[in-house]
Image: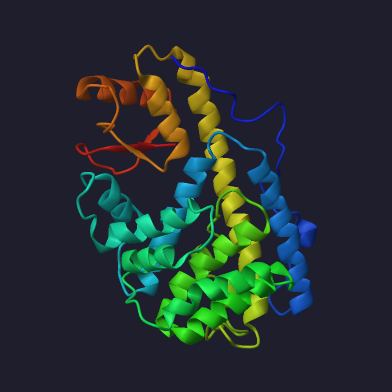
Length: 317
């Protein structure tokens, strides 16, 4: 059995929540106070990311899956997280995962992007999101570069970017939010993008005062909405991280008890991916050995079966 580092050192190097004193009191605050709250929230998330924990891959994937479900709603689709996960994990490599699966591929692709945002990258994202390419979108890489180089406060630069893309193509807001998250990661020197804005697209941050409408890109209140969405997004991401950390600690504590030869790569996949099919495609395990391994892990309460099915099962932290 391969050895793994413990999930966390002797004590948490990061906080599982944004400090209460930094949270905005209500939504009717000014842009400066909202930007201050966003800054403190991002510092809290920065502490987590720089802790370099072994389960951050799973965490990124879980947030990307949540983003994919929100993207589906934005694009007029009805698929929820479980259906979207199935569309990717139950599709044979090389086959078409369908519109729902492509949304997860797109949001996951954003979280794994670490280089410059190029035209081919944006074109591939658009294809996965079902957004038709035209001359208006050809300017997106330049808009991204401008936002990356901007000297404005980070949340305000993101608001400018999203508004610029939405002005060029009003139907590309989902693309704009995802690219803004990539710019955020670049500006904060994070190795990977973290989905913070897309998950909050239908949250309270973008509701108008009174809650009867939604603040839209380009409107005067939009920069403040982005700041508040970052606060809410960070809080949600930290809650997810705290849960995954607890589950990963359990998995790592039972890993030395496993006798299945070849279980090490499976443990690593559970820590670095959202979920793994019971057959563990690409591994050296037989179907019987893989099923036995997951039965053992379930018995130790180290993994959960996520599909609710008796066949074509899927396991994750």
